[in-house]
Amino acid sequence: MTELSTRLHHIIDEALLDASEIEDWGRSADYIPPLAQVDPRQAAVSVCLPDGTMVNAGESRKAFSIQSISKVFSLALAMGRYGDLLWQIVGREPSGTHFASLAALEANEGRPRNPFENAGAIATTGALLKGYEPRETLSELVRFVRDMAGDESILIDAEVARLETESGFRNTAIANFLRHNGILTEDPDRVLGTYFHQCAIEMTTRQLARAGATLAQLPCANITLGADRIQRINALMLTCGLYNESGDFAFEVGLPAKSGVGGGLLISVPYQASIAIWTPGLNAKGNPMIAIYLAKRIADEMGWSIFAKPAETL
Image 1 (cartoon, rainbow, N blue to C red):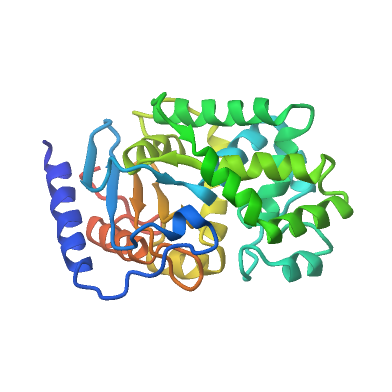
Image 2: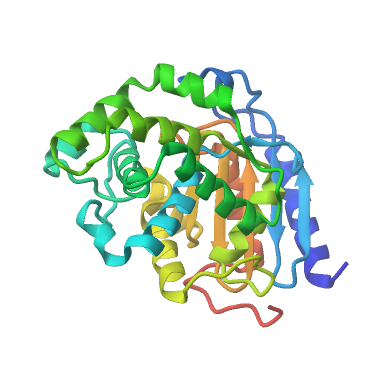
């Protein structure tokens, strides 16, 4: 074990110990039945370092539903396929509203503000579906995630996808509004079926941190994408990755990140580390409450921020 990984282990263990004293760990997402049953007082942390060393703590082998973190992967594929044409159907600005807001979509004349709010993610999935069958699109996406993580065991939880489909009335309204405004050209039901399955991908923090090595442009990354695409994905993660809490996270932590209502948080420390945290309890804005606390502790004590001078040890 290197000096760096030893230090990280100590920081994470101390942060988890302190977090255990916090009374409120948030509430599990109650509008997706399988997620509502998850005990919110669980935690997992995994950090992938440039040489491929993994630092893990807590329930790091426990798979969870990545939900909106999947939007990073679908965005990466869509940017690779369409380039700048993608921005004709989705914007790049923070919304400042709830991630499933219909009012914000209508106020913006039907064009999603960014690819990480639900409307933007549905539009992105619709673009990936154009000319393909849902099964083909999902196969491509899961293949992409498996390649990034270097792990063939990553799967979609079909039961979670089914239950999301049955209860996703707001997303159905969003998809139909997008179709009405010409943002979606595919059948809304086909797009939503694909989208719900995409969100139901299950990963552990170990797998997610390893996949994130591509986004952090670590030497150990299993696959590489163009630097231009990676820089822009990280920019969107910084400004839009935690919905209407993105500004606070950028202010407090200073790192690109993407959250999911399954409790996951993927954080990119460019050229230095990829961090994945899972704490299923959410705050009022739909972000993992204790994961944010742990992220700030790790970033502060490691000196990790895109606005800080890189540590000489790295």
